[in-house]
Length: 175
Image (tube, rainbow, N blue to C red):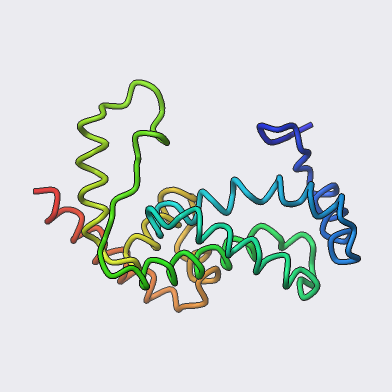
């Protein structure tokens, strides 16, 4: 049985059951669903909202649970939650007047060059929130361009152009 670090099941049938329970107001189902969603939402919000990632994740989770009754298909939970998290993280990133780079070292796997991580942090911090958003969804979340388009509710062409510009900005800042 697949599970998260805390042992919560993430089998599609179980997740659908939890969603239906949460939609009925079942507190235990909501708690278990929160355990399933929290790391996923945090993983989306962190690279976009940077130091405001935890706040963005919290707001995204509130929005998810406030609107869980509107989710028509429990199987769509993760995509729906990802889109809410991305929009919330982008809202936080845009609100911040100065760019502050998040700590990548904490998220980096063992053996990663700390100096390299700091350089990457610096370069990512210079990108616009929109550019960090598409890069994170494409390269951190592993979504293809169509999936990013659907999650953000923007045309695929816009995703492609933002990815192109984000990569170019990253290369220029890296040089």
